[in-house]
Every structure is written in C-alpha cells, then in structure tokens.
Length: 97
Image (cartoon, rainbow, N blue to C red; front, side, top):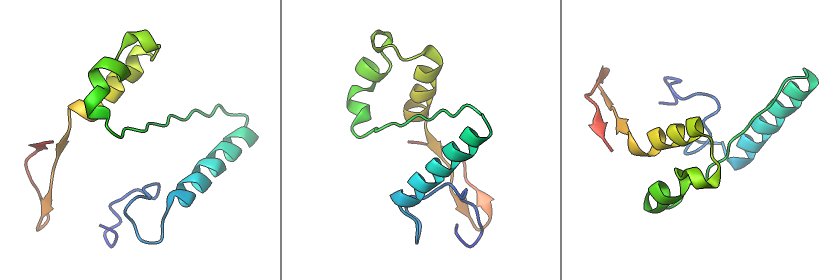
C-alpha cells in the first residue's frame, strides 16, 4: 500500500516513520493555517475502545446531547461496516465486519 500511495498522507497509524506526534503536528498546522486565514476550525475526537459494549445505550443516546447527524455518522461507522480486499489488482466483494 505504501509503494502504491494508496493511503492518504494524513493516515499515521500502522505506517513506518509516522506516529501520534505526526498527527498532532498535522492538526496543529491545520488549526494555525485556518486561524491565520480567519477560517473556522472544527475537530472531533473519538476514543472508541470498548464502544461496541456501550454504543446503543450511551453514544447514540439523545439524552447526552450529541446532535442527530453526528449520532448517525457514528452509528454508520461502527455498525454498518464492511471491508474489501484487493488481490492481484481486483477488488473483492464486500465482507461484513
């Protein structure tokens, strides 16, 4: 994947010579650049360790004040997941995760 430049430059996990520090530097640079351009900056951070144990009851609950669009986005990320594999240049069918 590295040699084919498939991953976006912003992808830091599981890549050689990249770390959490690189993610923080990228975020900081984006904030600074947008601040200087008088642009709005928004960021969302999710710690989803164990999310599958509590997702329906906590994260998607209307009671905690998470906007409906964000709740739906999170729900789609963690519940409607599938993967494809590329083998010999051909994309496989989708497999549910």
